[in-house]
Image (cartoon, rainbow, N blue to C red; front, side, top):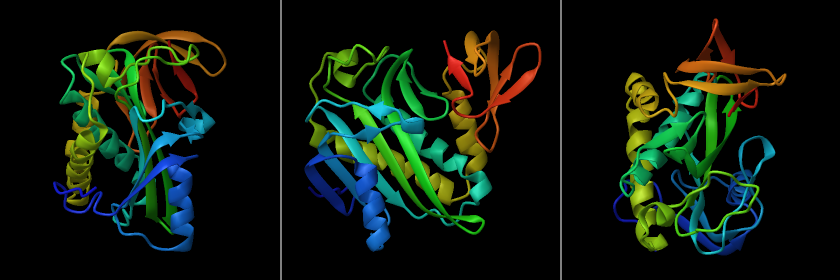
Length: 251
């Protein structure tokens, strides 16, 4: 398959019928060679996909987009690496929003939701060289035609569930890759403030009062008032508190 609507993302496309993990394959590739920036590893069936902090990503064979993207964002300081996660999440969010009439959000840090239903997950793995990023593997799973999900997965959805339409996966891939490339080029061109504004404008439950559970089990009613440049979630209740991934749970 030839991706014709991008400048560099997807020009090298490695397709596999089955693969345990596209991120693991990308890691192996990077350990042995230097693949072109924008190389995409995609599979019809990912058997051991992972989400954030070791959680599993389950995907029905041939029905979803499961892929990893290799980038070399050496222009980003290690301390600012969350902006890359934001850019990629916006790319996926904007892709989904082209097909869904309902509001599409980025749920902190980088899941994609249609209203309150999860449609996509993203796993970013960075390697550092000194104070700069060296390479990035951006893995993503986007539910396209799957309609039945594991009972342990709550609030899951797909493009088909949202639109009652059956989609062609090969037709969607170039649209997704172009959407991600647009955001990555904004980042490369130094439009960091714009990306951060766009991220907040599409952030799930931003400035809304909702219930959250802290790591110690305490439930609080709070509102999201921002995200730090380092990626911490800022919640205001009696005071403003800052949370890293897995330190706070959305209820």
